[in-house]
Image (cartoon, rainbow, N blue to C red):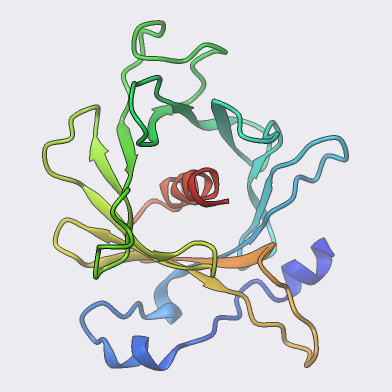
Length: 214
């Protein structure tokens, strides 16, 4: 399976509505195309495996079981990139914090000396929202003006990450198989990242969407 993912990692489907949107359309020839497999390479773990367009193992998540309060995004060698923690806060809204590197087992604002670089808040008004906004990303722990917004449908693997100027910086798309009759389903999909946007951070957002909407 992994060899097949490597051989098809760069294939992207272009949808008609995206072709008409010149402002927000990502020119995929100059973007980073990553294949995301919703499975850990370790037999005993659940997680994610991310393959680059050159076939290299870029990112992995191996400590992902059920709905944990903490997720560690690692590079292909197992070095921690981001620690993602569910914020312990009263209320129904999902709030998450993103830290650089590893922060320990009990990560929270009160128990770690590190400061979160981003906080992410799930949007509860998806049904009423015409834009179908899934979540907002804020710098640090402030919620005064979002840095990024995610809209679309994670369940259908069709999402866009937009900056505060509403420019698309990354997209999640279904992966098209080269061979007719072969379907990847929802377990394998594409993450398309615009030049200048951090592919590591894009993958962190994928992990959060999976927590919020799976």
